[in-house]
Image 1 (cartoon, rainbow, N blue to C red):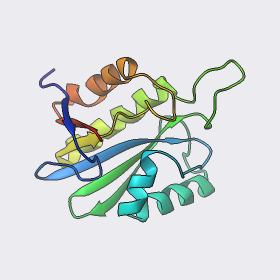
Image 2 (cartoon, helix red, strand yellow; image 1 turned 135 degrees about the horizontal axis):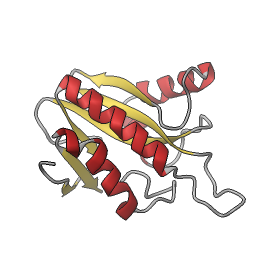
Image 3 (cartoon, helix red, strand yellow; image 1 turned 90 degrees about the horizontal axis):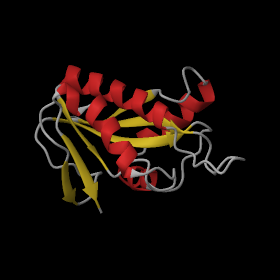
Length: 157
């Protein structure tokens, strides 16, 4: 594996890099969009939310572990990754984050980034409303993206 995740202060919706860029975030599997990082995305671009809602309505491959890539600028894509089951803790008190689904989705992001020669940018995905922990998310990023020699930047706002 080459490289490490680069951590920087800043806004993940304004990625700092040349060339193609993919901004990654986690969505839920019930079609909800309205809290957390998605609000910053929606402030900048309308398409990711519109396409996510259409995807949910269609139900075509709309399930945990899947990713929808939405081109929002000439060299910027948003990766709507379904890595969260519903939006609240379940009956057993488990957070909505689903690490296995995040892992599958990040692998798809890595493949797409390889194809279009893109760098990957994100906030600390899964660690806010989804209830995940960075010590579990970071290795998934390393396996799914860094292992393919794709640069990753994580933004702390």
